[in-house]
Amino acid sequence: MNRAVKKALVLVAGWAFMVLGVIGLFLPFLQGILFILIGLTILSGEYVWAHHLLNKVRSRFPRVAIFSDRAQQKATGWMRRVYQPEETH
Image (cartoon, rainbow, N blue to C red):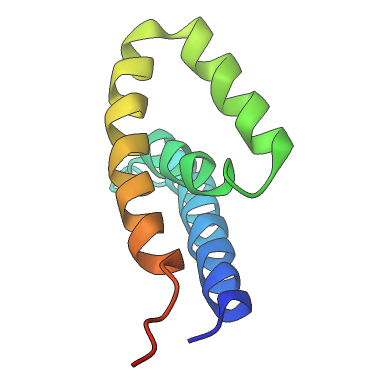
């Protein structure tokens, strides 16, 4: 898989979480805030506005920052595996 396809998949995943988060704000069985935070974490690597918004949320809600740090570490590990250059033999 080439790099452009991988980047597109990451963007689709980030935006999908954002959409689920907005829907989840109105539906009682979805955790809207959680999905929005996951989406912001994924998109923060691609968009400056998402990075700034995530930092504002983290500074305003310190307890969320702890969970955000853990999620960011997991997302970074996942992104390294996704964006890892293909090995040639």
